[in-house]
Image 1 (cartoon, rainbow, N blue to C red):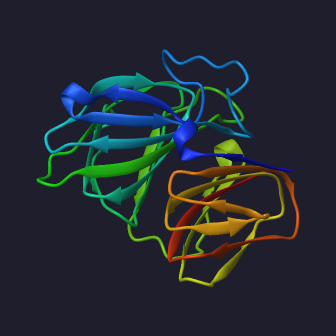
Image 2 (tube, rainbow, N blue to C red):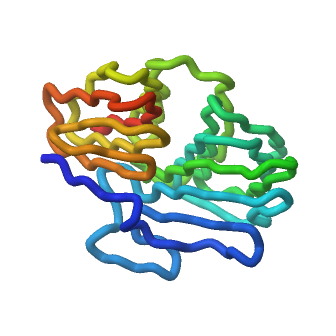
Image 3 (cartoon, rainbow, N blue to C red):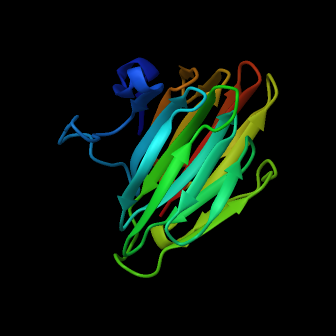
Length: 217
């Protein structure tokens, strides 16, 4: 079964006066939707836009796997475990908040910053916080998040190119850019598909496109 959620249906958040614009795919913060709390391990998929100089001041997280994909611009990350990184398009950043960690996310560059941040629920709570960045991840190279029994697939497709959707109990597909055809539906930037019992499905790029696919047990 494929459940398509359109970009226009996302809950709008952030703080526009402070240069922060957010679009939330799931129940988040003051927007509580008991019928939209999670899909598989995914509990948040936020599209964040930060103006130059804007950002999220230090704030806490716990018991969450936080994976970030930069679309454009440069993200500055600092956390309470001592890590400080610049995250650019093509990099996969993961913060395992485990028993608790605090971090800062900012746009310290001169250009607008857009990133997609996805939160996954771990199989077990607690543990030690950890952090890593994979710079310039190659197309089709899976990125494993074993703590959540999940695998991220990044696909960059030219027009007319096809990619297999992983056969899995749950697959979450987010369109970063371009247009794709999936299971009879046309998906555009910001659209997502929640697929249950995925089997023998393909996504076809109508235009050049970039997709994030979460394969979950």
